[in-house]
Image 1 (spheres, rainbow, N blue to C red):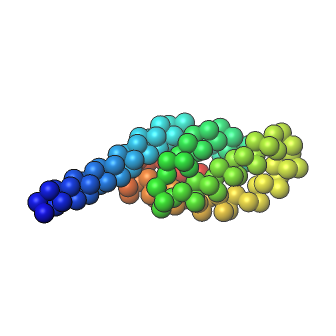
Image 2 (cartoon, rainbow, N blue to C red; image 1 turned 180 degrees about the vertical axis):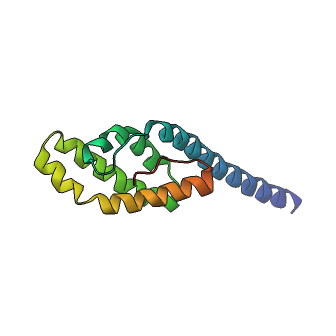
Length: 123
C-alpha cells in the first residue's frame, strides 16, 4: 500500500513538473518572440510575415488558453505571405485585422499574466 501511495505521489509530481516545464519553455520562446515582434505595423498585413516563423513555433507550444489565438495570428500571417506584394489582396486582408488584433490582445494579456513577458502591442 505504501509503495502505491509513493508511486501515485511521484506520478503526480512528475506530471506537475512536466506542465511547468512546458509552460516555462513557452514563456522563454515568447520572450524571444517579443524581441523580434517590435516594429510590426498591425495595419499592414505584409508586416505579419516578419513574425510568421516565431508565431508558428509559439502556436505549437502554446498552452490551451491561447492556442486558438495563435492559430488566428498564424493563419493571417500565412495569408499575408501568400499575398506577397499584391496590393489588392493585402487591402482585402487589412479588413480582417480586427479578429487578429483581438486574438493578439488575448496573447499579450496571457503573456503578461502567466509569463511576466511584455509582448509588443500591435494596436
